Image (cartoon, rainbow, N blue to C red; front, side, top):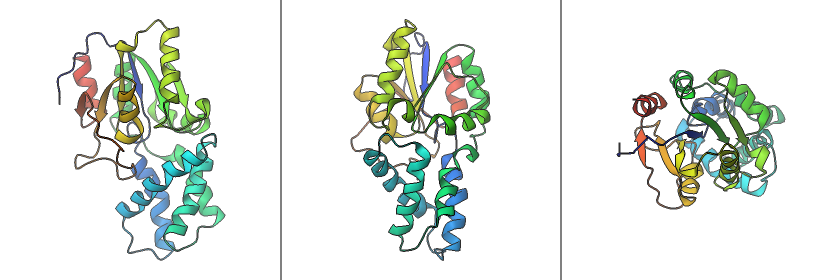
Length: 239
């Protein structure tokens, strides 16, 4: 963990999936049974998630205004094609509608509840409003602002979410310097946030590296501090 002064922090922006919600487990709950039923028993979980990590950002870039369930539907079809097997409509719909079933990391609800007592909490997520609402029930906290890809008409690592967050902060008379961005994905979050001059916290859920469902960043990036869990971050910032 690197040294970081938390004294002037007033607001926290959060990525959700991979940071607060365990999207690897959620994705595999759909992809693993499909792969086994399709005869892909030699394709392990890491390879399934790696294929997803390649196809999701391409599909988002090609369809920036599509809602996230539509993105997942298209990714499922492409993933099957890339592995030389089929994916029926039911398979595509299963992935498309699965977001609300993805579990929260065990420490997320309690850590968010503690952080809420002192800071403004803002979601900046690559999903749609309806999908996030289902996930929010698992997190159990009322966020002060929710910014989704549906709201901004684009997907991270595009800057739209962060510009919208800055607009919200200005309306609340909160300076940019009083914000920390908290996220797992170096590709989706830390690279664009650092490009905008924001301080970032890396929640490194997988100690051996980045999420298997997230592609590697296109450029080197150094977060301002790193924690293994959101609970560890909450302990540090709350003192």
